[in-house]
Length: 320
Length: 320
Image (cartoon, rainbow over all chains, first blue to last red; front, top):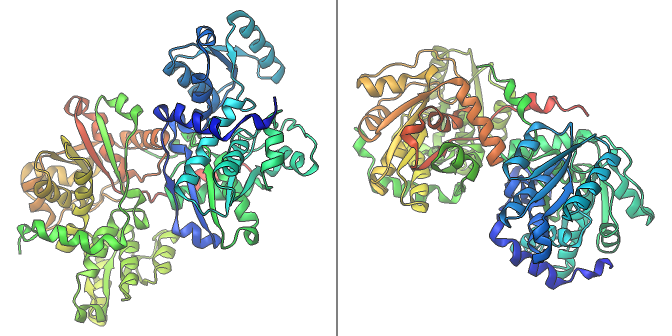
């Protein structure tokens, strides 16, 4: 198997497959943000996607691509983030079981959300080894199909549909920017650009504190993420066996940004655009902030990855 | 002059007048919020309006309704809130001067925003008397036309266009809910419902801590707001000579809500809808929270009034 196994038709099929179960998210812009940065930015708002993140696209595509035999045994994954919720929801739509391995320190709201979608949760110690070990046990016991959070062709084809919708709506983008963690969104974005646009550059955006994709891309050799510390908690993972080669071939450049600029970008998006985004989403605007000359006067598409952020602290500050 | 001076045609004309200068804001909904409250809620998102609030509609209508003679001398008002920004922007679009009296303790961001739109600012002591006195001086000196924040027919006709757009898009609402402070938005909403729908009830939403409209409406006698304390800082003012009679005749009911439920509603809107709204906007959802039986199984339109909220504290909590 190699990355070119994802054809144009497979992305088109993925889109047709998932359309009944996803939101066609809006594309928004802010004159004020455009003025600040001296470029035109169109935000593809996957924070308004089902379960609040683009992960819904890949999860639905993966679940609805299973054959009848596979569906009998359900699906499984390990995740404490948006993929867990997205997979639990997709499985419930297909009327199959989702077995989700989560660390026992996962936020209560995320555990509750997976449960609400009918997911069956297996708690493990919060380490990569413990996760993988328990997942292996669950797979052996249940025969469920493992749906990797990003390094799986059906997942990549699903995530590709966000950029496909953006390109369908806005044909003359100079560049498309997507955040990169494991690379599911960025590799899908790059493939959609290759098949449906070809005119735009594709740019990855990554926190400086978790710059393994940046280093992998520039050296050509896989660099592991290690154990990074960044506010962009959706971007902690390493590239995968599928995502890295796609990114190497179809992505034009990766920029990194500071934690400070992630927060500043997030604040700009909240205050000027009036939308709620998670830190991982703000990374794309943060690289524009750090590289103004590169982006000046350009027409840019940004994939806003999601809007799942813990606001409890903010609302506790109101005195009632 | 009496309230019935605002005809159907005047609201239609206002809409045509302002359309080039405003956003046709989206109508959004959340399946999760609908499930929680057992009703269908459609949010008319004026947080996505120019300057982040519905106030833009009235301000643009008032400014572009001036005759040539009036335009020479510009406009003036006293406001520390959204009206000040909205009027400064409208004046700059019409290429006339906006003279804005603001209290000297107004938030810096609001002062800066008015300046950015080219407004001329006059600082006064933070009291109602000082405001009015300085405004009077400014008016005498400049001959500028006073654009009251809400108690002015052109303002009410402008604010009415938000509900008009909502009704145009969704014809079969059981009720339309709008927050009430001075009553510009609520009276406009009620008139648009009367002229363009007639099938819906119109409900006002007010904080219990600033329940002067509720008491005025129910007693039939004007009650002053006094000096209320509520998080919903857009709803501190008293009804006016125009807005009260319109509300008395065309509004069906006013509900009040607690400060706790304002915060809870705001949090729900941020977390489930992924949009930024100011506390005044959350009051409409808060009255549904407090009166579930009244609203159950109904199809409801809510006017989200704006999204201008100070998020500095929240973003300071991020450790970078």
